[in-house]
Length: 500
Image (cartoon, rainbow, N blue to C red; front, side, top):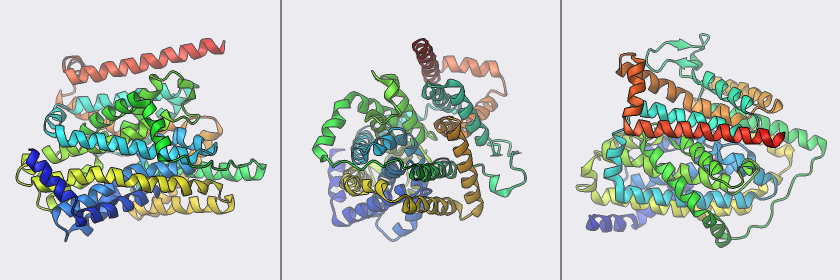
């Protein structure tokens, strides 16, 4: 095994591998920054470019795109309050408040370091623990996936401590919108009103663009008219200072990495779920949970570490069992097949130099986007100081282009604008949009997996409930759901007593 690893390291350090990896990283940052261009789309668009390349070189480019695009979404989330990717939605909760205080450089630097650390640690798991962790992934069935979604749903209560009723209303609205389109098992059309654009449901990316870009533009215009002074960015402190600040929270970083890897291994969950769960964990274990959402380092560190740790975790079942851990790795699985590589043990023996070369190139990708991110932290932070007359129309233009680019459909643009108006209404009445996002992300997953789990027991609800307490993984996740709800109720009661 050590010989194979050394051969892979030599492969990863060849000039064509390094060049391909660098091109993938730069392209990935661009894809992550632009709203509407997700990691899945970036990897899919890059696959044809790799057709004529040697397998190792092509995979290195795709890996660079995957890593960097997962990180890149945090940049616009922090600077403009618009998540470039769905997983960056959580980073926005504390990242943008820091930017509005003039700490945009600090926020981006922490996000960059967190993304790097999370990616490196998850790649270490991929390098050393892939076979046993892949076998763990096989133990997940429809019931476990449903309970994972249910656990994510309980986070809505935790994130709505200021006003539980409004938070639950937001989550229910997100759940309702997730049911638009075709039923995952029966194929029955729901709430489509005969519109073909709604047959596949409402795109999460389109919804995110609308929910956050339109209200942000309206808020910019309102502030400019009322004469609110825009805060200028503070001077960048340097990499060493930010790394020291990051590693003051080593325990949180470790927990977020573990969360990201485990959720990545569970097929179908994805980086968005990992980010939400890590944020919830950070808030629950914090000595000052009331500061989350006001712009603190922990609120950026946890989700960014987790959603990049999900990358390595999702690749484990993909390359060992041909079971994709996320939408991006499903596309990546196709790339492996195109290059003549069959997922399984043979990748680590017959094609060891290619496989280990790819894994080591992933390590390098996570390191390379650090200087790119710090360069953006230094100069890109000035973007929020741009005149509103220039910034506002640019955001709307990017939002329209990003929505259209997903499927080349104007209907998606209209849906984005409709979601924008809904976002404005939610903001006006103080209803948190995060609960709605979580409902959208997890609603379809929870419904589909519950339907499959019930079909496996022929609709016998009692038998399904019995499985929840007799299957070890299901029982652990169920206990986590109960603990999460109990913690939210305790916090709500404590807040009520303090208000009195």
